[in-house]
Length: 330
Ligand SMILES: CCCC[C@H](NC(=O)[C@H](Cc1ccccc1)NC(=O)N1CCOCC1)C(=O)N[C@@H](CC1CCCCC1)C(O)(O)C(F)(F)C(=O)NC
Image (cartoon, rainbow, N blue to C red; front, side):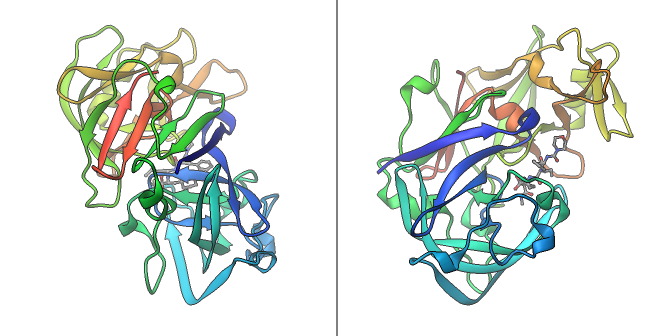
């Protein structure tokens, strides 16, 4: 089997939302597919009213296929400080033509203010490794883990785009979605992430800098978070760019367009090139002359995060069979 659905960007590509069908008859929620976590949780009829502002709610009592996992709970906190918690049901979940008949659907009873204020986001669908799942007393499998045995090929692909809808596909690699070759690299799943190592980077037309960058391919993180040495080398090339402590990040003049940024993939010279305009993440003020940088530091995290700013420049294969990542330009 195969499946897939569109991934529609929210403002500034801060996140991408994908329609997911849950229950019988189907209840369609727009979820943030997140390779950096492994819980599938949704706003629900059980979410405190005061914490809901516009989200679509999954109501298990309206689903003939919902089964409550009595005594099961979950609670998760994310790198940006947001969090949610609740109880667990099993129900039928589909992404396009791909259906998992007994998927753990974690219903939120509480969500932090960041989720309440993100009115288009009805929850998350985690595609990290199973060790990250927070359900107690027994961890639950991700949608991909449940679907894998039935898939034509044990893969899913991310084809996110700048400012327009892209796609997540399951079970196949669309040869029309990328150019050139796909370069596969090994993944260290010991921390539950799609963790890989880039051999280095280049700025604009500059020479390639060989420096090991270990980080995660994370659809749930908006920006490209890199070691401070790389980040200061990049912004050091841009007159007027500076670290702005009030914005808690590097800012730069939106014009002229900043230099491209390339990161290496594999050991035979392949690279993914981010057009400079991707680094103009969003205007910081009303004037529109200063932009918040799409590349920021990874200090305090312990690894780099190849988030949406990086992923939208590539076609990425997440191979659950060989536990590798495939990167291609497009
Ligand atoms: C350590 C730095 C990581 C920060 C990362 N968050 C982010 O990147 C959030 C995502 C967001 C989107 C829309 C609305 C609100 C927030 N964006 C964000 O912090 N910014 C601030 C900088 O400008 C860009 C937007 C994160 O926690 N990602 C989570 C998943 C998000 C959690 C919040 C809701 C959206 C999904 C993650 O799962 O990818 C994770 F791997 F980081 C993680 O925490 N795993 C346990």
